[in-house]
Every structure is written in C-alpha cells, then in structure tokens.
Image (cartoon, one colour):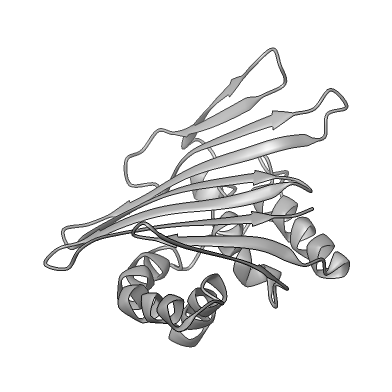
Length: 199
C-alpha cells in the first residue's frame, strides 16, 4: 500500500471541517505504521476451497453493492472525544471498507492457525492460535434464512514502537463501525471511532 493510498483513506475518513482535516495530519504517521504492517505481501490462495469464511470476498461484494446503490451515508467521526457528523457520499467504498477486506484469514500458511467454534444459533467464531497474527478473532452471526446478520472483527498489531487495536463491525444494509486505538512510544495514544449508516 502506497503512502498516497493511505493518505486517501484517512482523508475520506475525515471529510468534514478543517479541524477534522487537522486530525488527519496529526495521526497520519501513526495510522500509516499500522497500515504498512498489514500490507506485507500475502501468500496467494492455491486454488483450493477456502477453509474459513471468505471475508475478503464478502466485503468486495458489499463494496460493489454500495458503489452501485450510491446512497448518501450519515457518517460520524470521533477523534479523541471530539465528534463530527455529516451526511456524505462515499467516493471510494474500497477505501472505506479496506480494513474489513484486509482482515481476510484465508491464506494457505494460515490453514491451521485459527480455531473454529460454531453456535446453535448459526454463529461462528474464528480465534487466532498464534500471537503474531494480526486478526485475532472474527465473529459471524446469521439470520434464520442463513444470510449474514452481522460480522465483528478484532485486529491487533504491535511491536516495540507502537500498538494498534481495531474493532470492526458490519451489519448489512444497516451500519458499519471502525474503532481504533493507537499507541506510539513517545507520541502517546490516539483514539478514533467511525460510524456509517447504510440505510
């Protein structure tokens, strides 16, 4: 992922006042660190059937759907306690939902890296077995007709310089949320929360 692409993602996340744009500038370097950590070259699928639910495929389909609908989105952005809300047209849904797509766990090297638990209500939980895996847990629940009811994803990236924790939630045709906390040594902690209504 290029620096330009990362900056576009942040600018789209804060399409509000000058204060919101300043927030982008303040946390750009911090967010860039975590984005770069998630943009390492992936192992390409070998053509076999995915072992886990196809998160990337699902969200790419949702991106296409939202792009086609082109509905205005009521979007709220909170940065360190300061919130702005505005109805906007999302220019690039691929950027908007990039963190969801990047949470795909169907890599050949990870075929045995997640435990799988299924609930009687049709829910399924994938939990990382190895501490270095960025996506720690995915929770998927379904409606009675087997369609997706909601998806929740927990991501974590850390090293000696920084730590990033993400909680992503998606309810089809309803809303999506992105909660992110980032701590960088010598720079402190930044928190932001994005909520978009899809109807």
